[in-house]
Image: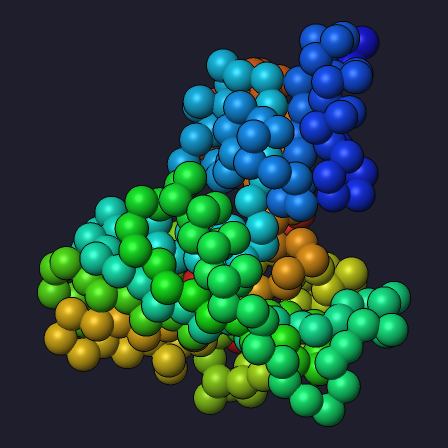
Amino acid sequence: MIDVVVDAIPSGIGKKNKEDFYSKYSVKSVFQAGEAFDVADIPAFMSIINYNDAKKLNSVRIPSPFAVSLMRTLKPLDVEFGVKRVMCTLIRPGSEPMRDHYGPVDTMVLDKPDVAQSVLRDEMRQMFRKDVTFASIAVPSILLAVEVVVVDLERNASAQQVIDLLFGIPRIILVKSSMRLHSIDAIFEYIRRVARPSADVYELCVWYEHVKVSEHRLKLVQAFDPHCVQTPEIIDAIRALAGREEMQESFNRTNKALKLLSPGIYP
């Protein structure tokens, strides 16, 4: 008896699999970000947003790692201070491990603005109905991606208040440049040594010194692993569809199983 299938087939085939197999045999399904929004009952699943909704449905789609990383910070910021609009510049690895034939090499390439903006905007609107302006640049790296996020807040906040908020949010850690975690390779190596040998970085890493506020405008610089920052959401999605655990129970169990670092300031 199969309760839930995680469909990790190449992009664009998931919908056919759903029609031919999952729906036919009443099997619930989790789809990846490469699939179209209409493949699933929930087009963009995140534990903190729609876990309980997923318990009543048959399929979910996991959002892109870029959307997952943004929502990790934007959702609590919106609850605490209110968010008017967001501007985000993504600096992303142009390649990845085991795919060294990808580029770029010794250059930086801007992604087409209509593609980068529309894809993330449409995805974010499934979870966060605020104005998000987005630009993306590919660089010669295979490690973490970096987002420079500027947020216009509705209510006054100090940098310390934002730090205090992020300090207590699971799946987010604050990292200090002054303690040598000033680069993506330093974070990658630190995680490998203190958390998990695979160096999979499930946490969103926000640089402590770059939390700045000027009047109602907040600036954050955050790093994440585009290969696996969404992994905790996939595991929670399976439990949500199976309907056997409440959100907080699944959330905590996933964090423990993956050995996520506790919220706080590192190292």
